[in-house]
Amino acid sequence: MQRTEGDRGRRRSLADMANGGQMRLLPWENERGKPCYLNTDGGPSALARLADEMETVQLGIGADVLREASRILDDPMSPNAEVRYAGVRLAECLRDALRVAESRGMRLPVPDDQDDENGPQTATQGSAGGSA
Image 1 (cartoon, helix red, strand yellow):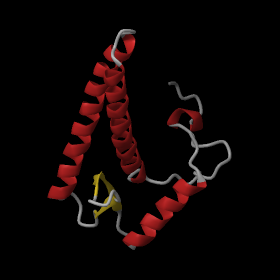
Image 2 (cartoon, one colour):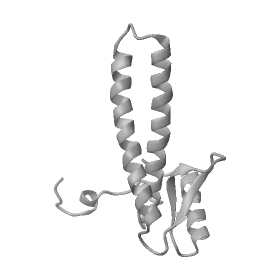
Image 3 (cartoon, one colour):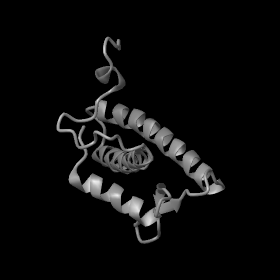
Image 4 (cartoon, one colour):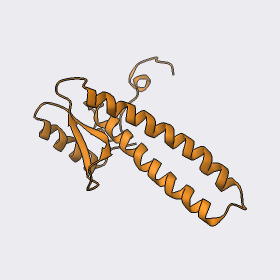
């Protein structure tokens, strides 16, 4: 999966904002629905550990909601209200999972060949005689 220009721009702007430090997208929003960031210059902090725990909880809730929604959606006799509720919860969990993925992706080092037209290489693609 290749990054879009918007993804690259967001990563560059966050790097610029941090002035050499690293900004971490937190797994929650502020009261106006805007993303929250943490300056992680000083290394691990209590807030960073809380964010890690929150991400784990969000992903666990997503797995639980998916199991329950699958049960509801597999039953052709499920009432419309239950199907709608399952869809709303799935959308919430997907939003949370995408935020976790974005946050974790932003913390990955940017490879030197990021703009290569063939996309990023895996460790086995770039090595001679490597096995998967």
